[in-house]
Image 1: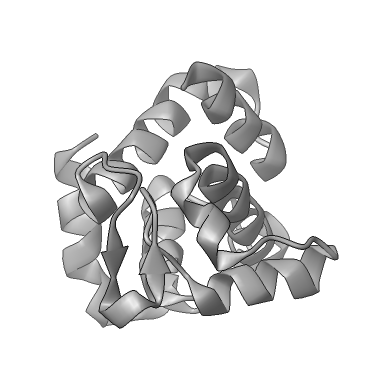
Image 2: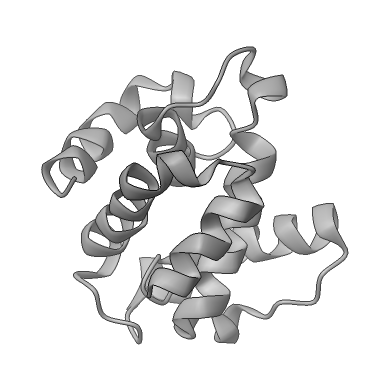
Length: 133
């Protein structure tokens, strides 16, 4: 898991000095989304794996990065983390937010989409994630 978390850090462009906090964020997202289970299916089949990756997120990452992930692969923890990392790297970038992203920003984007960090509907999700940090 540590190797996967380091991949997450590098894809987000975060320094290793942030490592402990960012490892905790990955673990917290996985706990909130699937209670740590890799083969969970949710939202009537549109969300899969430990991070409950939606089909639209897979399509978005493939469009943005020229990758060829499939929704079925989101049950593979490493691939789910890669997709999540790419998604958050793009939508949670300092350039896009106008400031360095926080763990709250990233969690709320994961829950609510590209503008999730602004949506009040994602505040409860952040509270759940925060309890696992």
